[in-house]
Image (cartoon, rainbow, N blue to C red; front, side, top):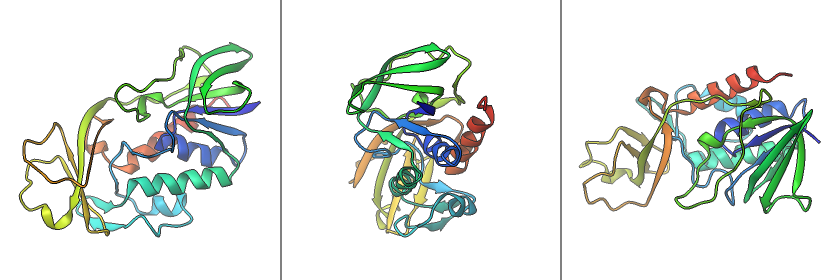
Length: 235
């Protein structure tokens, strides 16, 4: 029996799991083979002190000061947080999805995929982070109704972005991006409202959903949402 199950291996979900694991038994259920690969949030943080609160090491984040804060490798942030959650005793079920759940004083959660041998787990409370979970086109999704007072979620308007990474030296001719994040690994992460028309030699690209409000396109907002989730828990 878990105290809290988090459906969705998101940035707020990981941060919440680390904080909650100090007092509660916590499990994260995630669709992907590895949490945070790829990420669906910008590698930008305004308040660097938040990293000191969350992480034991920042060696591979490639932090670099930008006009709006500090750029970093978001995938390594997620890797560090995942390792910390696991060390804190959080159970992480990758390549696993929720097929159904039932409530009778506690939740019975039916699972499909690479989870435990017993395909049903039990929890007192659920945190629903499915809205912010990265899923590739055609991927299967979690299937359950969140109409229950013990299923906690904090929703924020989202939209789809095109995200590409290039060598920082190649940025000069790109002027129509919404967000430019330089990192100390000599790479630059660019966020666009739509597919760029320019013929760009990308190192990597992805499409993902993040906050519609451009002011919220930073890690600080995800930390804020984690705090809101914890405040809403009936414990």
